[in-house]
Image 1 (cartoon, rainbow, N blue to C red):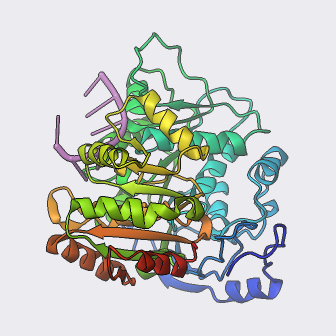
Image 2: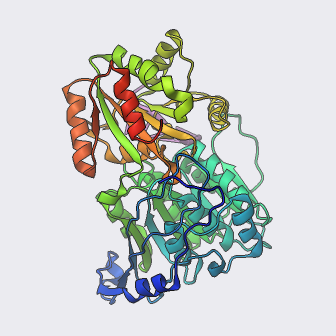
Length: 485
DNA sequence: AAAAAAT
């Protein structure tokens, strides 16, 4: 359903609704993963919250996100009530102003309503939180960091680590926007490729960066941990994955705990596979909170998924140029995901050769080029962006309605198995905040077909087939059915 | 080299 008026009031939650939900609280014993606290009796409450408001309007692609259930597990004695308004969170007026004036928020989104009371209230327990792509996770931990800072203390009090430089930059931008009236200082610590100069110690109150650089600053004693109150792992499952940044992240956490064992740690991601979930539960402090979304509910209902069988690579290129990007301007911006840096460059060259101008981003580019390409795309100067999985996670550009998987995401050590987490994150680049979107998976050969089937089975979602890659009408039907034409 | 980050 499309939003009707630009400033239509978001639906409100009646007091009756609230009481029902609170009365529905069930108390069950839950086993605590940490061995040290196994003997203690733990109470867990499962709270199922109905549809909350999402603060978006005035966009033809917007529709109300599906109502979904978030499972809450709280340990310890602290009861939490969801925040239906930002006022209930006792934020400083400067931060409230940032939320309303700069961020243009009206009310907390669902994940915000549930997680913020847990983040902001003593005893500041660790939190493992999962929520859909584009549901407002960044604002949760950003607000969490901002509101825990002592403004008088000019020293690092919050650190956020992210899997890519682009994400670190983007998160810093959100934080500065939200904290515009707070006077809180912040900076980005990422490797820029430029020559290192001798640096003074960091005095910024909030530091956002990539794990390698943050770890380096800590080891060089340029990033003090003495006053640290909160550590955030964005895309936490990847930050804790064996083939992700597990070593770096654990190292940073260890260093922090040495100095500052009570530092609050927040883990945020749209995906947590079982292995990572268990590991996260192992490394948090005994008493902690968890929020999870059911696997079946994770797939984005607002993003329609398609597959297109292509006889060969050239057919894939033709589909992109003549069948999909034909409508480019009308359906919004597009990201084309490829598996390797090499195929990113190859596809780029091929498209340019046949007369279609695109830009490409991948990790081998110089940082300044990466920055420029992201900026052009975010400014709407470019329409189509080819990317490796560099941008698969977290990249937030609300004009992206179309994602094309030129290559399906596969496990690097198991090329016949899909990487379902990456798939989720890629399609999450479309349909930000409940907007409509479409994904086209370009398949070539039986191996691709098998991988696609496994993805479909894993999420239990429908992936419709576009009957004929040569037939323009088939794509019109698909795009229309996705709500994009 | 899978990509990412980074010395």
